[in-house]
Image (cartoon, rainbow, N blue to C red; front, side):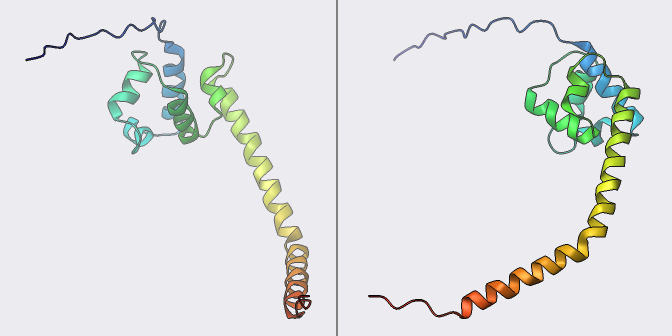
Length: 136
């Protein structure tokens, strides 16, 4: 009978958990009227979100990106100092204005885009009717 000894994995200390990240997540979640379960969705547990918000665990970069997307903010809003719920709301408002402007532009240019697509399709169909050159 072979007895294996257990080896220990030595990990470097990860450093303290930053409670500010969790505070930002909670403030944004509450401002949007979301529950912890809403924010967790299928990717996380409600308990994980609670641990993050209370500063008892840290999030990976991927988890931070998912949470930021669900909250409708850039990841930097969760990670960088200087972001407050008011600043986030201002950034969201500016983004919505840009999207509204883009929508108006797309509505105005739709006829030209449709004409260009029609011209392209006509050209493409004409090219398909040209027989290939004979092989020599």
